[in-house]
Amino acid sequence: MSDLLIVTGASAGIGAATARMAGFNGWSRVVVHYGSDKTGAEETAAMVESMGAQAYLFQADVSKPKAIEKMFAKIAELKPGRIGLVNNAGVVSPTGTFADRTPELVKKVFEINVFGAFEVARQCLLLMRDWEKGGAMVNISSAAARLGSANMYVDYAATKGAIETMTLGLAEELAAEGIRVNAIRPGLIETAIHAKGGAPDRLDKIGTTPPMGRPGTAEECAEAILWLLSERASYVTRTILDVTGGR
Ligand code: NAP
Image (tube, rainbow, N blue to C red):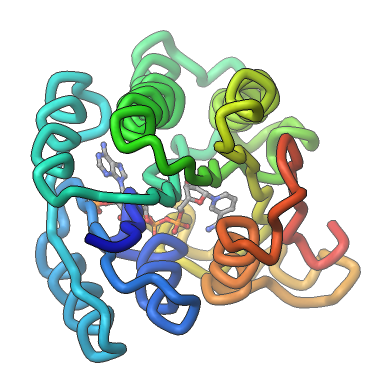
């Protein structure tokens, strides 16, 4: 039995980069979770194993609470020991004004980004308690939480506001149990999420607007996540770290 890192949404983008780089950061076992992109998850798992760590593939639609519960029941069979969680799976909404935010769109993004992330954190907490080894969680927010994303996707921004509030409350609840809870707030990051949300040219249009003059990479987010999970951040909890190039 050794430590276990669980990364949701590890088939692409920030989650995939975090899983790939976990081996360099002392994680010997990595859960590579995905929703629908099995090929992407298999590629991530192969990279994890090429770094000398053991990878475990798990599929679950995070908008389905029962699917999350079933996945964590299977993860328990891995005898996890100390657990790290990267609560990362998420989507953006289609670009538009507030008037375009129909109840269906708002429901869909909240089901994945908020209800999914809450249930992932809750199931992980129950597992951490079973193993009594403590652990650390990093939730993935967005600069959108403090910017509001006017004329883009206010609903998405609000989901990340909810993630930040959850991070603050959960961190305080769990501090005495030796479980640290933090979040990062990525800015404009080069991943496929923009294209999946219907705005493939988003970074071409605004990628140079941060003070640093460029978008960030998934690997730059992964560095921050892996630091927050590590013992190097042993006195850091209830913190939300901007990874935004100064935006
Ligand atoms: P990405 O490349 O599109 O990856 C998203 C991941 O989430 C994929 O692995 C995807 O899995 C998974 N996912 C989405 N819906 C899911 C569902 N219903 N069930 C299970 N898994 C699901 O996006 P990314 O840019 O890396 O984003 C990762 C996180 O960072 C998200 O929470 C996002 O909001 C946040 N973020 C990103 C940026 C940015 O500029 N890229 C900025 C701020 C915050 P499948 O494809 O296998 O379903």
